[in-house]
Image (cartoon, rainbow over all chains, first blue to last red):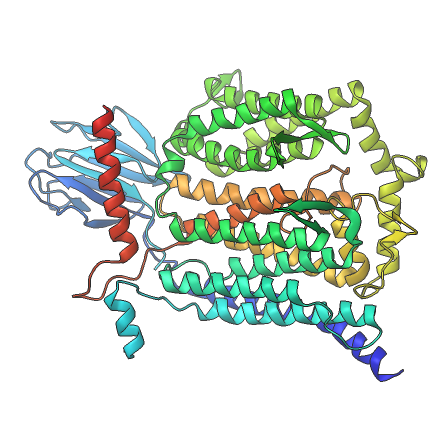
Length: 146
Length: 479
């Protein structure tokens, strides 16, 4: 085998091998990415972001991490305490049930609103939907990756 | 902080370095240079790089876009762009290798042939990719006008139905003055944008409520209408346009998105039942559907006619074997006739698998798998349902299309004529797939670097604010 044939063969194989090197480098990067993701597995299911609050409590922009079951109200025993004078002591319940989030009013005085619609019974909601509790407007969002 | 960096900060530019992307781009360049050298050396009979102008300008463009990403400081996915660069680079290499007279077209007074033309398309596609990735900061314009998008899409479809020209047995090409394009490529993106908007809005209703008939739980009937409409559109495309590939792509993407949005297998089962029923009826009514199935089951039943393309492709895989014949050493044409019709568009996978072998073909599939992984990852970390569904849909459009056409070329599924994303020759295809990758990059952005305290706000953001102020004043003046 002369030098030219050999180097042509090497170039040809080198081309394909380099594509596999690329794939391997990316696979390694993805693996690191996934490991970082696993270590963040304990992160909350989602969060409520305060869009507006007439009385300034909680401050707009605040992000409240969510568990699977969240009770919302003015009473300090709730998992999410909303200190607003139009919010009842036990106001609403936000739950994550397997495939979707659900909101339920717990007989509050001023009601709970989902995207401007009064909540009666159990209503499903998705990320990006807006809740109004008392004078506080909140948006359901996915929790951040980091 | 160096003086140069301080100067950049002073004018409001905050670069964000992308070392992983840079490293991957270097590997991509090395691979493409090796491929180019292998092709030119085989042709010249000695070690040579040939006319490397095309490759050099392509790589220069890729690195320029990388630098633009760094300077604008967006924190986007760093793997998608090198992957797209690898795919389009392989495309350029294949087009350089195929007979140049397959396509001839003059652009701006210059007569160009296959490879330079493809470089023009790739360059334009990459410019669109970079522009979308850098400048798209809000998805409001996509989210808010979803019915407008849907109407535009249907309008486009009607235009093709009425005025389309026939390409390769399918009514695909729309010609407006000197411009010609294949709207079905653009339509797939419009479809995804509309579906993402519609499903994000009705997701909760679609997944929670149901209609009961006896013990059977069916999805809510009013919300089934879009599904029926989609099914009808797919059938209409097959009947009027005779474009099986696009119809299959639209319907599969639709079903997949519906499942992602609702997690209800019943929709998928129902959709597949409708698909099979529609397919059976079409098979009975239309000879071109029968042809496709027959040559899939037995291409040798009509070796000189309908089965010719597939049989030649199978010979090509046989010649290629595991390692391939090497670039340039394959048999793309016999005399003056290409050995596989449409080898630069629909059958580009066969051209690749002949000269780069099974290993090359698998590597190509691996590259599409990367796009799938990155796209779904972007969807999984998206901030809300619309962005998640949009990212999923854009990814599916690329990946399912690649699966349909590779499967067709390999005789795994019936052959339908669509392009291999970012590889096949073709302006519309390359431009639209560039736009898809660009949008995915924009969706993956995690916001610009938080400003260091005490510096002035970002130039781009300041310009944006001024533009919005102007827009608001115009709106006021009009109302």
